[in-house]
Image 1 (tube, rainbow, N blue to C red):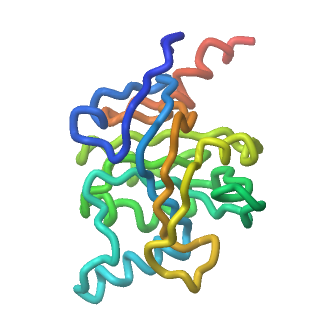
Image 2 (image 1 turned 120 degrees about the vertical axis):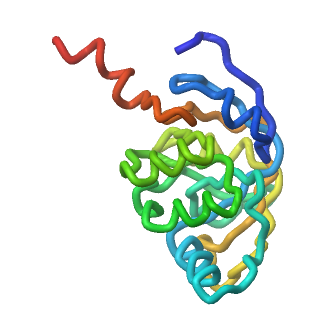
Length: 186
């Protein structure tokens, strides 16, 4: 892991997605999508029916979050990551639609990692338990699809210096494994 923090923009282009390496610390600015399990399920059901998605996933970075209500003067309330494995059943289909990055917490299935390698997509982690601090990076929150899902709706989040760490890169290198390796002998 490098000590330097990389400043990157979202949505991700191919070069950005493939340049990130497991262990890289990043600050993301631009637009990321917010969506959790219920929204992922609906997106895949839409594809299963042969219909167009309500949002473009081309180059998109999705954050697995269901933010709490905003206090006056704020875009959102606390915005901590949810467990990414809950999206694993849907992720390969969404990667096929052009999704170029994912942010959450926790491990991903082997099937998801293989799909990430196929499409050149990294998985990043946000710090669990730091939702109030993460929310400071969110400047605007706009629901795009499935408003009936409340905080689980698909939304655009305008972010500035959103902190994350690359956990699994587009080659499949997994920081959860390599980062723990030096401590296994203790």
